[in-house]
Length: 81
Image (cartoon, rainbow, N blue to C red; front, side, top):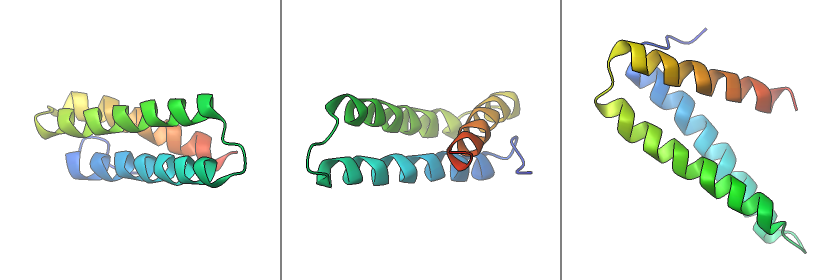
């Protein structure tokens, strides 16, 4: 289990979700008929990842742990698909 209080470990979780979103956006855009709503949702999630990376720069251990737990849950959700 990742150390959710370690900002660097949490950054890697956020980057993993960011990469997944970016890949999904590209896949949608390359499809014959992209789902515009899905692309917008993915872009919003990608923007949230960027905002969370900024927040982590000055985050205390509690805040880093909250962000880390959220992204660990998101990664698990993506893996369970």
